[in-house]
Image (cartoon, rainbow, N blue to C red; front, side, top):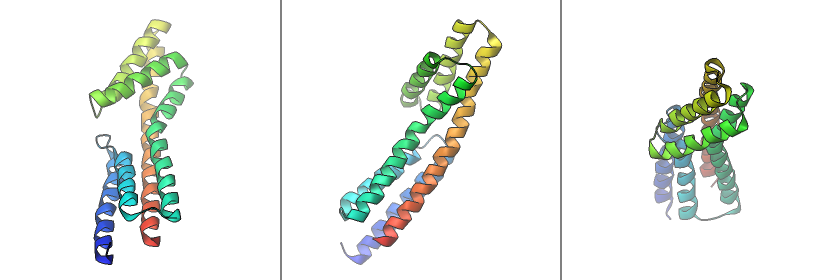
Length: 165
């Protein structure tokens, strides 16, 4: 690939990386997935070197970790309010399924509804069930901040990668 072509390719892929990072402010666009795919396409087109393989591996680990962080943080937040791991597991499973069926907010709505339903059946206490349900929202907010941080780190790694290539 000529230097001009490589530079143009780097500019285009950098735009996708930055858009992926900026999209983390909304839950509508899967920013970490865009960043991961962008890095993979760049790696496949420009070729494998020891450095590029390391950069890609770190970006891939961060992206996958960022995609999973919702479940762990939301679950931890709910467990602090006394929700059982069984209700948390059902809630998170519903969240994953409905994220695919009704993006962008279907997963969050399903997670909250399932948490509330299971907790109200288990506790027969509206106030405690509501508290567990609200904790899902708190966990979602915290995980969004974590994902934004991960996207910023991925973007920084991306620019380090292309500047050292």
